[in-house]
Image 1 (cartoon, rainbow, N blue to C red):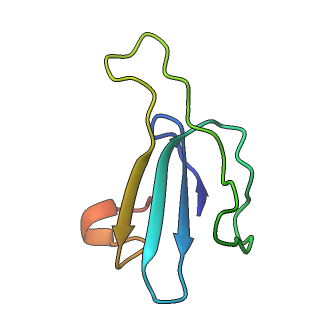
Image 2: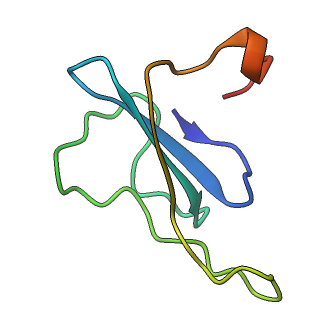
Length: 77
């Protein structure tokens, strides 16, 4: 998955072991697209520069056992 406005963009990568890695707060100019195969160490995008925000710019990272779950996410990841 690549898209959303989190703030910033979100990339979710399905790993071969069935886990999903989610990277959030990325700049809109992503370096990957939906369906692209990515390799370990490959840049996905840059961290969003958050101006006038309470929290400094940072990467949000999660490991999940699911991509989406309607009970939690509704129609969007």
